[in-house]
Length: 131
Image (cartoon, rainbow, N blue to C red; front, side, top):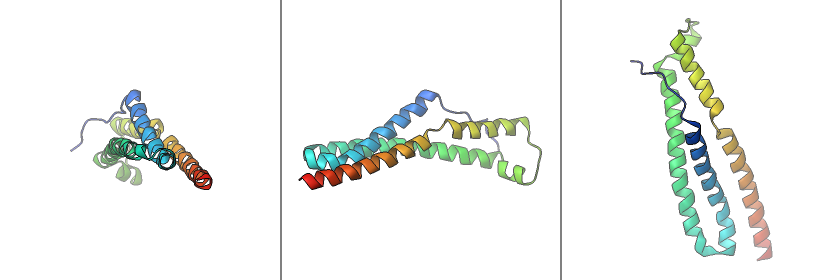
C-alpha cells in the first residue's frame, strides 16, 4: 500500500532543529569549561544539552525513518535495479528524497560538532595547565 507523496518540512523547522542541535553541541562541549570555571553550572548546562539532543535526535530519527519508508513503499531500489520505468509519481518521490538530502544541514552540523570538540579539548588542556 502506497501512501501520499512525502514532502520536505518548512525551512523554519529545519533551521529550528539545527539550532537546537547546535545549542546542545555547544552545551556539551562547554561542560569542560564550566567544570573549571564555575562548577555550579555543570548540571544546568548538561540538562540543556541532553534535553536539546533528545528533541534534535528524535527529529533526525523521524526524518531518517520517513526517507527509508518512502524508499520501501515506492519500491525505488527494486525499480532502479530492474530498469523498471519510473512513473511520474516515482520521479516526484525521488525528487523529494534528493531535495530532502540537499536541504538537510546535517553535514554542517557534523562539521560544527567536530570543531567544537577540538575547541573543547584545547580549552580543557589550557585550563588544566593553568589550574
